[in-house]
Image (cartoon, rainbow, N blue to C red):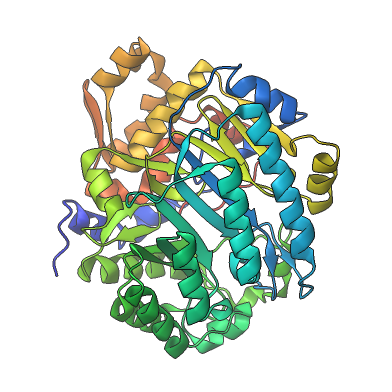
Length: 473
């Protein structure tokens, strides 16, 4: 099936332009927020978070919840998530008790129980490390403190390691109200799976996919990674054959960032088995060529979806958003993060919980919210966040509307940013007029690079601050 999105041919051409790819394959943020987590300051605690959020004003606006469940039974060497690898099932009890404390404190201090939860996401770690009784308890606990909904338009999603579930657990998840599932696949090649310590057969995944479809989940996502050890274009092509045959509704294909100095588990990977930067770029081109030829729409930054998927429809209607879980439908402005390392996002404040489990427990044992760092956005941050969101989600920026909303002269205010874009415009990645900035099909793979021109903190980084980002390609 031909891809319906204008610009796909130009995007494919750009991904085969080696000189262009080398030029723009630099380090940069992924923009799940702006300012990014690199700008979150220590000393920002639960009291600062509470003071910054509402100031006593109540609202019934919809709410989004993210619950981090950090436990994994086995270690995956590539993983950069906040996780606790253990086979001690007793650890869940202590964690659930503290999640309950955190919910109770938020319920008491922020009075959010009247706000309908239109989006819920369990991430990890491995959320299905919990057994049936524990998952049921957590959902009931959440319903006690927040207003969960059975509305058919809700997005209630869970991340799943295929090795940890069977048909009985899938039935339970559907009964608990989940209607979206994300399967952590990573790669289907046996040698790659051995190299990352994540072995799961195609037959097992196929059986799981068939049953998920039989249980009428609204959407199935595959998480995959390119740039893994022992991966090359040949093995990747075979993985893509399987992925396309299984036909998930959404595909997230992430670029592996090898940072063993930050993530200890990655030290188990032999760096000599990793593909080169040039090989990774060819892999990205292969992924894009194959998935768009199979009918998937490129949403932006790693994400491909079927044309009738709600993310594709939201992008067409201008409702697409981006947050700490990636691309999403803008069903709720405020996000509450629960659990160790989780991030909450309100209109002008980001707050991250303690990333260490013991510190998370200690704060709650003292009846304090476990917030460890965060940032209150300035007026300039809010303005630049709006620009970055529009470019990432809509691949364009309406300058006239922005000037009207924020009462600025865009071309004067962002003279430095526009100067930074001139080279990209000369390379055909975008077009700048007095009324708009429009990303061309050729510029689709370079959204992060374009956004960096509007990022004050990246500019400071380029001038000497030491912040480690992943490569943009």
